[in-house]
Image 1 (spheres, rainbow, N blue to C red):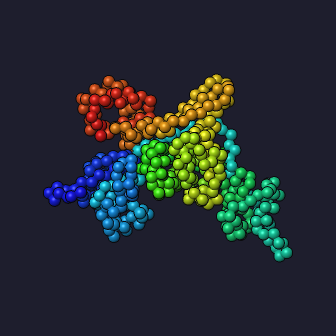
Image 2: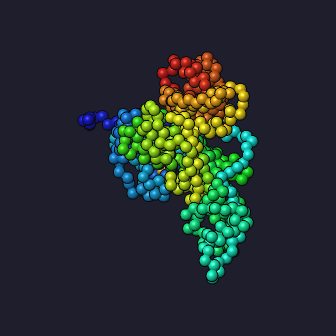
Image 3: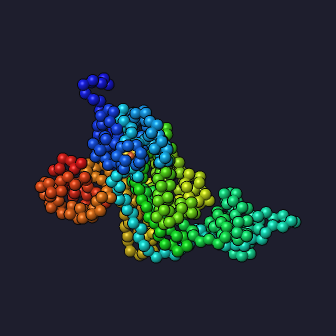
Length: 478
Ligand code: FES
């Protein structure tokens, strides 16, 4: 392309996950460009490169879906000041939007903490009566001290104490717990709290008497990831946190993400790392909300559709891209959190529920466990509408499941005026209620009464189509 010296060069810049795109003039900072396009970034220091709030990530390579070639070299080089601020904020590998100037086309991912208009992603947990039967159990034991002539090792003495004091036999010990065992035993006069997984493996040994076993349940959805932190002793829900699945930057729906792994050599790795990073963030946030540390979480249960669980485990989802939709593995799995790079307790296990078949995955199994339609004689239809939808028909003859992509429309994606509810819209429900009166809203927009405040439609509601009709005569709400 030849530059016209009289006209400044413009480049295409796309901000994910909102998907907002626009032209930014050569040499302008990303912060200024984002403001022009309508992407609100955090900026406490007002562009002085000191607060580190405006950090963003540049995606590299060619992105079919957006028809864009993005590269870190399409930004001005990192300056010393920017580098220092990034390092201070633990954001090496990212850039400051207020420092980086646009020199080419870019696909930018805005991390959740850098978004000025935080979005509300709520996946509320329903309180229900359950029998607590956790995989984690904690017991206190007092261990015999070693003596000359007693050849048993410290682990042998712990096994004896567990057998005599709690009738727990045939136990294994996790390597990390074993590495700490000797020093921990000697800290509190040989009294220790043992954390046991599935009555089978000692995964933690702590000095003295301690209480507190925590578990994390996570629904890894195509568009949102929701996590729930529970007290495993009482079953109490302590915290719930949710965020957008950062894989959205690489494709809105399952098939476009599978294509991304096929078309990019590093595609699977990028998406695997993105979801692991998101899980770590959620665990940290949930732990903070509950007043504990993520390293105190001893157990996690993850569910998701089959493409999500494949990518989470670093398994190539290629076979799920076409019939007969073969899974790498259908059964449930227990994996050490550390093997996936999850920053929970080093001995923590991750349990992944089994899948059913093809695209009917562990999330659908979780729905069955929660709703138990097979316990009721009447015919029941369960519908889980997400970016990928599953339905289960429960009849006296058995259960029948099916799955189909629905697209992310209900969560604000791929519709011209779609968006998730921003935090500022604390009265979002009010807007939704008003919007349900189609004629009222339509006339309100026409008269300009809410013009200027309206950014888009946020709705998980089933009357989206009605809204589309209501807005049909509006060129654009953006
Ligand atoms: S706005 Fe403060 S560092 Fe960029």
